[in-house]
Image (cartoon, rainbow, N blue to C red):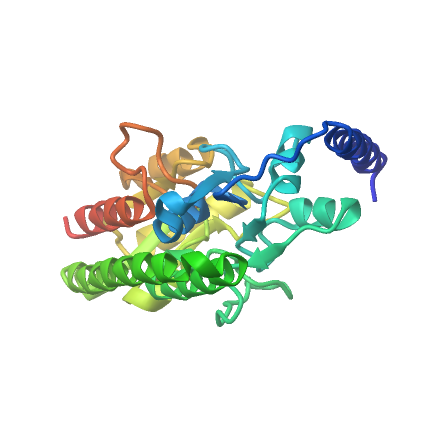
Length: 301
């Protein structure tokens, strides 16, 4: 463990102990009716909110616009988790930093929404690709896991969670069917998604697309001249009509691919976060609709 991380843990432990002492001497216990739910990132927060409805308060840790892989937690993040009834993480190695923090500080109810998912491997490494949510069918499994966890924590609300989950699963089923239909409109020879980080493998497996990244997930080398040159060659050899860029990744790498290959960037897509207010991509369903419209529009030209 690094000195920086160890110091951070010591600060958090002290803060939590002081908070506990303060609660013991306060003289009265104020019970909260609503469950306090925290998720690791915004997409998972939106999924959880669709299950809880108004019966729980839902917060997330990683700010919109930042990648969950390399996010550095701050003391207020752990305080949120410490105060929660349950902390939903994606799992599959996405939030190792926050899981380690929680495990080193105290007894926290951590639930991985991806439990039971058949994970795809990261090419060339003995690691699993965490982006399972980019296949809508996997998110249905997430919803079921969240529903069951909340029902155990709050049996009186089980019927509410079941009803909310059923309605959301119906919406997700309709989304999945719509994506399949839209994907079929793309010419077979053009069904290749080129992005900076190769995060759309689950999407590609589910909806019939090949995926190419300038680099693989969690790579130690990102955007090297050799990586860019390789992708430029693939784009030109396959005569692809468009490339794409993620909202949470520096655009200069894909701009280099576009410039050197002569193929335009068709638009931005969402991978690790929902969009900001007013973006039209504020929820999981909306980001998937946006991504599909962007892919189909760019590859059908």
